[in-house]
Length: 234
Image (tube, rainbow, N blue to C red):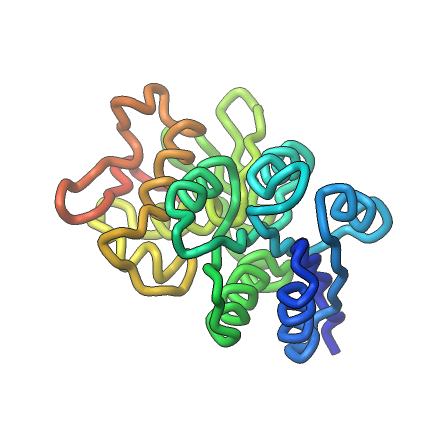
């Protein structure tokens, strides 16, 4: 039997925190709670998490600042919990390294689906036999979720960045619509106001393109989506 995954819920509202924890525990997860950033670090020091559900509007250090600090230390999955009016914060959160977001008031089924999808993408056993893909001087290890440059330098990828790059690498030369990419990365339908894929593409370009302003690897197909333009070797 697979060991329960550890999820840390960081939310200052006690009622909301209890609801989130209840949903996750009922789904079979092991849950820790924190009301602020100090509590978050205390939990992580004694018990590393597989995923962090992080409210943006926290007292003291907010969820965006905490996401930045988390990304310096770890690639743990981060799902931001935001208000419906926090469009700018959602985009900024994705840009600085969050993997996904849910909006308040949240639907429990949607929440659990997002959590399940992110944990599944980060699971250790699912890609054990996946090959290494090489492109434009990069070596992309699908098993270790590791990206290595020609000079041996390793780049760290968040789970969402890894999933997007894998989707693109496995369909080289093919126009991938935002709708299709979003379904592969976050398992939700795209709508015209959803900037998730554009933000993730921008993050990847900063990491792998020689000139992110003139990309040669992940090319925009205007009005359609994106193309992985580099040849890929298994």
